[in-house]
Amino acid sequence: MDHENKRAWIEFLLRKGEDLLGILVFFYNESRTFSTDEIELLQTFTNQAALSISNARLYTQTDAALDRRVEQLSALADISRELTSTLNLQGLFQLVLDRALEATQSRTGALLLRTEEDGTDPALVAYRGFAADAFDQDSPMTGFVAQSYYTGQSIMVPDVSRESAYVALDESTCSQLNIPVRRGDDVLGVISLGSDRTHDYTPDDETFVTQLATQARIAIDNARLFRRIEIARDRLQVILDSMKEGVILISSEGQITLANPRVRRLLGLDPSHLIDAPVAALLRNERLQLAERMGFGTEALLRVINSLDQRRWDESSRDGGRVTFQVTTPQKTRFIDRTDAPVRDENGRVIGLLMVFSDVTEERELEQAREDFSSMIVHDLRGPLTAVTTSLKLLSEVAPHDEPLGKMIKQTTDASSRAVRKLLNLVDSLLDISKLESGVMTLDRELTEFKPLCTTVVDEMSPLAQELEVSLTLQIPSNLAILNIDGEKVERVLLNLVDNAIKFTPSAGSVIIRAYPPGGESAAPGFVQIEVRDTGPGVPDEHKERLFDRFAQLDGQRGRRRGTGLGLTFCKMAVEAHSGQIWIEDNPQGGAVFAFTLPVANLEAWPPD
Image (cartoon, rainbow, N blue to C red; front, side):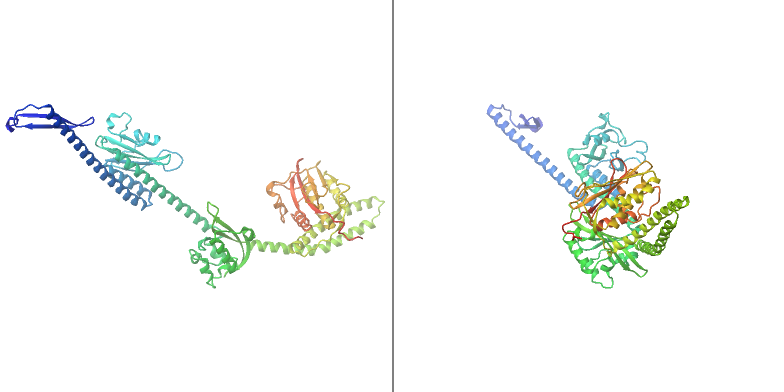
């Protein structure tokens, strides 16, 4: 201090709490001693100076941190725009990693992500700064990278040389930052960054990369979702293009959003002219004939569009959603079956209407050919069969009854008569089915006792039952109510059901005809329930409704005699013509129960004889 002509000095420590900020020294030109008051004054000044320096430093640090945070937020905003501007997954992976490297000034980086939702370990999808062959032998899913993935926690390693758990993939790495990529509680992958300087990562870096990982996860999920939608759309388009059915989808706004190529062939409409076009605008083009080609009247189609606009769909007025109509195209006239199905969102609101058009021309032609053939059989067989019946009756009458030859003739004519009656029953069933379907047949109702009618059926079917070793019995209450039925039709119903039961019942089995009083079992008031029970193989549930269709046969089951598939159809139509019901149940003892109901006569309303 001599060369500066200083002769005295005093120094104080600059402290802020427990922190030492520096030393403050006061120099004097003259030698002197310091009084207590002077020391206290200087100490007070020193304390104020320490406070000012601490505040200045805090302001500077806060300002710097704020500037850094603003920069990071700005960078995140820029990154967010970049991430949402691309749907290319590999481009997204590389973009995320590049922005993490730039923001933290890292030398190396790797992004690992699960490629599936099945819980498999993540795979390396992007990396920077590593040697080209760095991952030929070793996986980056080791050490602190794996620990961060499995724990779902961020791991900052200030000095990798001090950590035995660190697995080196790049020799120049001195510090490491590992950030999990999360979706809620699910960890999808890890962003791993490496620096060639120790203690190079700060909590701000950790926060920034965590926020970047969140944005990256959203962008990657969107890109993956878009890719899945693309794949689903392409698959759907392949399916639609290969379908034999035509498909049209109308949105709730009344716009056609989908029409597959089959629409052109079936309806004569060009899909390219339909897609994205409002139905109302297409209807104004009279040459297009849109409504007629889709199986609607113009007003009816407009009502459908209006109901879609109001987000509603009246199921009861749509004929079950199925309509068959005729359309003429330049190639031919077709019969088209249209099925309508409302499209609903997750809340059940109607957001569109899907129409599926099927070509049923061939089925219609086959059905018409079958009806023509059936009609031909009815008219061409009835006359000859009647003649055979008359001849057999005459032969039976003229044959001597007291001679062996006569007995043999009678047995033969009886068997032949039963066969002919069975053929006549088939012919009559065909004729009656046709009449019932067309609505031109009327029932010849009369007061009928049911037990004698059943006895006639048992007498008719007993020879067949005995031949096949099946017992046939009646369980009819003696006081069963008088019925109001067409006796001839009901007798044929019973004949068909008993014949069917005997056909499927094995030897030593049984067939029972049973009746219940009015209202008994499942019968409605004013009806009696009749059952034909057998001990055969039964009827599977999936066939119980279909078995009453024309020409229906049980797959995999065949009786001891082949049927025509018309008997049960006649039974159903004849019973329903009496306002009754017919159905199939399982027999608790094994086999099937064919049950039906018939109306009881109102004797008070019936005119006296």
